[in-house]
Image (tube, rainbow, N blue to C red):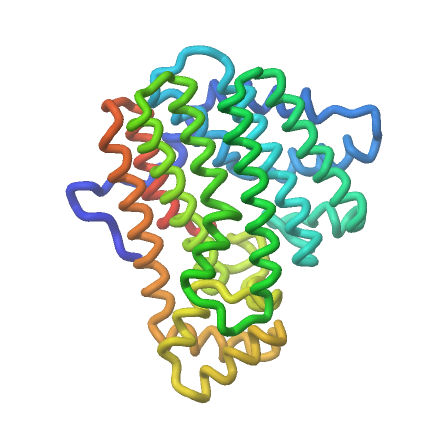
Amino acid sequence: MNSMPADARRPADFAHVRDLAAADMQRVDALIRQRLSSDVVLVNQIADHIIASGGKRLRPMLHVLAAGAAGYRGDHHTKLAAIIEFIHTSTLLHDDVVDESDLRRGRKTANALWGNAASVLVGDFLYSRSFQLMVELDDMRIMRILADTTNTIAEGEVLQLLNIGNADVSEAAYLAVIERKTAVLFAAATELGGILGGLPESQVAALRRYGMELGYAFQIADDLLDYVSDAGTLGKNIGDDLAEGKPTLPLIYALEKANPEQVQSLRHAIEHGGLDSLDRIIASIRDSGALERTRERAVMHAEAAQSALDALPASVYRDALATLADYSVQRTF
C-alpha cells in the first residue's frame, strides 16, 4: 500500500494508542455494561452478545483521545464515549438486518441468532438509551451535534439503500453515502472532544475535519478489504459487498477502466448481487488498477486527517490521533 511521506511516517501501532486510552476506555466499557442493562431479558441477551463480539471501540476511543488532545480533565468524556458507541452499535444492528448479514467480526450476527425483529427493536433501545445519556449531560450544543449526527447517519442508510444494485453510482454519490454513514460519527466524536476541552473554535473545527477525513479513509480502506482480505482476518466473507449489490469504490473505479467484456460482467454482478463469478470479478477489479486507485484515495484522506492535527498543540494524544490515521489505511481487518 502507498505510504505517507517519509517525514510524516509513523508506525501504525494501534496497541500503543490503545494503551494510552486504556484507563479511559475501561471506564467507558464499565458504563456501557451498566447502561445496557434492562429488565427485559432479550435486551440483555443481545446486549451481552454485542459486548462479547469485541471490536476495537474505535469511535469512543477517538473521542477520549480528542478530549485528551484538547486538555480536558473532567469525566463527561466517559459518558459521551458511551453515547457514541451506543449510536454506532445501533446502526450495526440495523445494518445487518438491511444487508441480511449473518457474520460480523467473525461471529454470528444478532439477527442471525434472534431474528430481524429483535435486532431492529434492540437497535432502537440503544438509540433511545443514548438519548437518555445525552439529556444527563444537559448541554444543548452537545445534544444538537449528536442529534444532527444521528439524523445524518439515518439519511446515509437510506442513500445506500437507494444505491443497491445500481451500477451507475458515481464516485461523488459513493462519497456522499460514506460521509453520512461513517465519517459524520467520527467527526462528531473528535469535535466533541474539542468542545469538552474548551478549545478555540478554529481548533474544534480542526478536530472535526480530522474526524471527517479519518472516517473517509477508514471506510474506503474497509471497502478495499472486501476484495483483498478473507473471512478469517476481516470477520466477514470476502465479496460480501458485491453479494449485496453495493457499488463501492473498487467497483466504481473498475467500471471506469475495465474492457467492455469486464464492464458487462461487473455491471451484471452489481445489478444482480451474485457471487457466481466472484473470482473473475476480483480479477477484473485487479486488472483495472482499481485497487491501487482505491488505496491512493484512502491514503489521501488519511494525510488530510493528519494535516488537520497541525492546528492542535503538541501532545501524546495528538500523536496518537495521527497514528490512527496511519492505522486506518494500513490495517488488515
